[in-house]
Image (cartoon, rainbow, N blue to C red; front, side):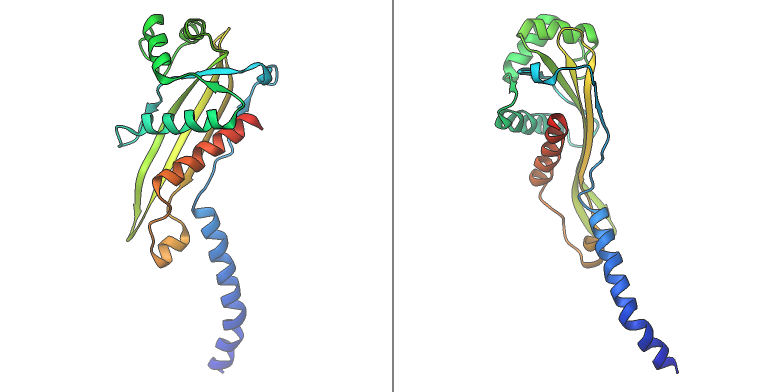
Length: 199
C-alpha cells in the first residue's frame, strides 16, 4: 500500500517539483526591478548630449561608482542616441561651477553644470550594491543601481530608474556555482537602465 501511494506521488510530484525549481531559479537570479519614472511633458528627443556626474557609492567596493559610471558612459555612447561628454570635461565643469557634492547635485548645480559644459541634461546615480553576496555555500555577484536624468535648463528630474541584476539563484543554492562574472552582471544592469531610458 505504501509503495502504491509512493508510486502515485512520485511521477506528478517530481514534475511539479521540477517546475517549481525552474520558476524559483528564474525569479531568484538575475532579478530586475521595474521602477521607472518618466516625465510625460519632457521631449526626450531633444536630449542630444549629457554630462554623467560621479555616482554615489553605497557598496563595500570603493571603486564601484567609478566602474559602473565608466561602463554606463561607454554603453550610452555605443547606443549612438546620446553623446556623453568625456569624464575629464565633466570634472572641469564641476570645478568651474563650484559644485560641492557632484554625486547629488541640486537643481541649481545642474543648471550651472549644463551651461558650463553645454549639455542638454545631467545624469547622476547611486550604486547600492556591487560585488559578492553569499548564502550558505553559494556565492554570486550582484549589482543594484539607480539613475536619474535632470533637464539642463531647469534642473528638474525628468527620468529615474533602478535595476538589480545577478545574485544567487535557486539553481546555485541547490547545485552550487558562482553565478555570472561581475563585469557581465554590470553590463546587463547598465543595458537594462539604457533600455528603460529609451523605451
